[in-house]
Length: 204
Ligand SMILES: [Zn+2]
Image 1 (cartoon, rainbow, N blue to C red):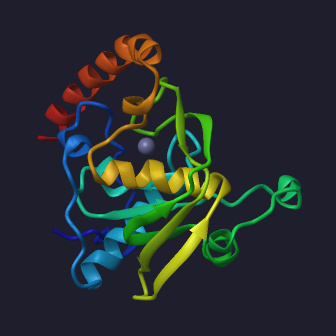
Image 2: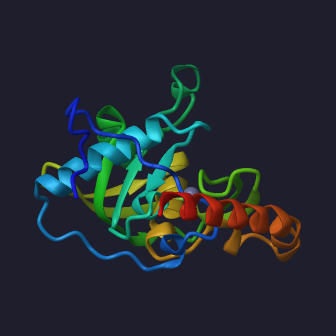
Image 3: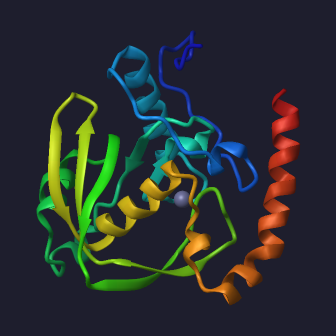
């Protein structure tokens, strides 16, 4: 299977799958060698994030139906608010490289301090819910060029990493939200599941 458009050679956008797609509930496999196929897929993940219908700050491989431990992120703060934020070491290193793909990312430790924020997800359009997560995390990851990094991350980057790495373990943000919000989201979740089944059958 080629990840490139045969005619133009440009990486092609992939369809972002909705709630109900089996890849969203599977545990993803670690990436072995970063070969040409992995690199080509990384390009497609970046294009899929950049060209998503709703602006997103992260996209995990299972969200395009691929159960590999890879995520695309772009959590750069807009220039207006950037000066008011105390950037963490992770943001200082990664922001200039964004948008970028992380290979086999993992959280190796986290702060006791937590923050609660409303989250959404490109695979769950129309659903939002509060999620309490550690405010700071230590990320261990490989970049697509093979660089290995261990970085303390805070702010939106820390939240996005936890949300995306959850995807690699088959976990959706709504699973962490209060029961009443899960109940409120139920109808939309079922509608998305229905829509996903229709889209999947068309692709077959
Ligand atoms: Zn998501």
